[in-house]
Image 1 (cartoon, rainbow, N blue to C red):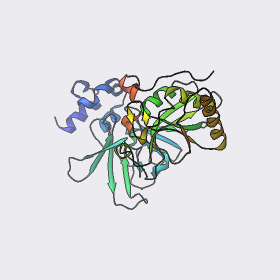
Image 2: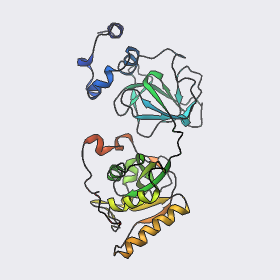
Image 3: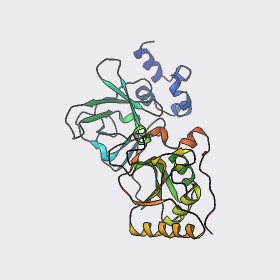
Image 4: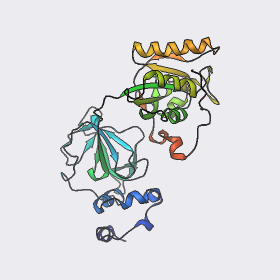
Length: 311
């Protein structure tokens, strides 16, 4: 079937659910909610007309999600004016966008790494920004989410595999979201495989974003000490290596004092606490396939469970 005929039928309301590529099957319900124009772009790789998209000139603070699956793809801080007629970004959320050689043999297509929806194309060497990269994206592939105006706070904890720490911390009332990532090293934008070597200085860490009006930092820190073994010095459970060490990354003196108070309490109760207190540094989100791992795979942590340690 030619693309012209396919799109003609699509815009006439004919369903192609039964002929969708396998990668789209899990998103059948979401696809049914898309407009014909959105289906044409995301499923059949049609390019929207230049200057027609809603986000070409948008400069509000926030993030851009995949219109099909909702995965976070881009930050507003990485958006720039390329004057090409489509939204342009010089960086993406690590692991969120996948590059594929285009069928034309010249360009490189970009798709959502989570669901495979077509986003646009990536170009290098144009000199628009110091990163020298341009993600040229169709507005119809995106959904903008404005930055929260409410005063949320962040906290950083490392206690073995970040999948389990993320899973347990998300249960706390007042926690907005938890992101798995890396902290403690110096190389910009480390990959999971680099961190796995155990010699980069990076530790698997979670960034906890929370509402201070609903939960305080001490409650988060207490839960952290209860969901992993703070006495293990070589990792956590079967996960052995420097990247799995127990660390609380603190951002100020108040956090340091809170964590030290809790460590002193645990030591008085006979625990030989190995957890270190370290100054927070640059946090890098992990690849998309690490985020909400247990929730997406409908599994439970294998080395994290809550053990009540505080009265």
